[in-house]
Image (cartoon, rainbow, N blue to C red; front, side, top):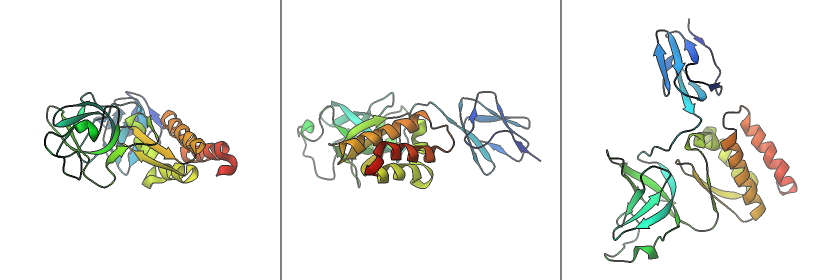
Length: 232
């Protein structure tokens, strides 16, 4: 009979034994040594059925096809916009992928998206040389105007979203803000009430700091109630 040595959402350190026995299977950032499953890096334990993995507390964003990302336009060529998405290579949006509308050849691309603009886009491909291609063709994909951008560690994005969207829905409902969460850790927040917008940003930053804490949803709810008071 196997034995799990840790609990779901515990913090594990490299070399820590997470489970003993063949009843359990190692997944991300863990490995098997005889009958022991061992952590390879610092992170949060995630137990799903027989699978045991570590979600790193700090990690770089690794783009994959289908990811929703938010990025900043940092360069423009004759046929592409180049966007900082927190990856070590800038992502590219071609003229063909830049809009649902036709963009004529030779157009001034800065009239569509200029330096410093933020866009919400989707990853359409990553080449073997790690060139990331984005598209702005799709529902909700666009340039972002009002609001503000918050950045968190990409490893904390699942905690911000919560189980079945519970955490991000809590923040949206209590602050009455529109929020878009990029898989790359770039978050867009926009609220009619500047104070509620500020509180939403603070809640997101608190989750980034305390992603490893159990009972975090209740803590965030109490935080929002304390900050908003009669505005809730």
